[in-house]
Image (cartoon, rainbow, N blue to C red; front, side, top):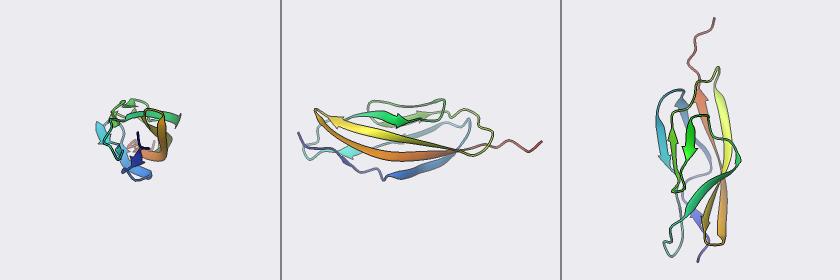
Length: 98
């Protein structure tokens, strides 16, 4: 088995609005096209969002008071081979000032 190589660029994935559905397929590949498993190993996703084992980042981010940055590390695994990559999402709060 070959080591996974990320095709999704590290860093900022998106700037998304609170309480609006969002999804993005994270991708890494292997030379022999073996199926990968994805998992969050550090940091946190916005509340209301999840990363599936197939690499789909999906959900409806919960309300935030102000623009909030969520930083996390995703691990792509095939057999005993792993590759990690850091990402972040900004969730925009649309609340009017009081």
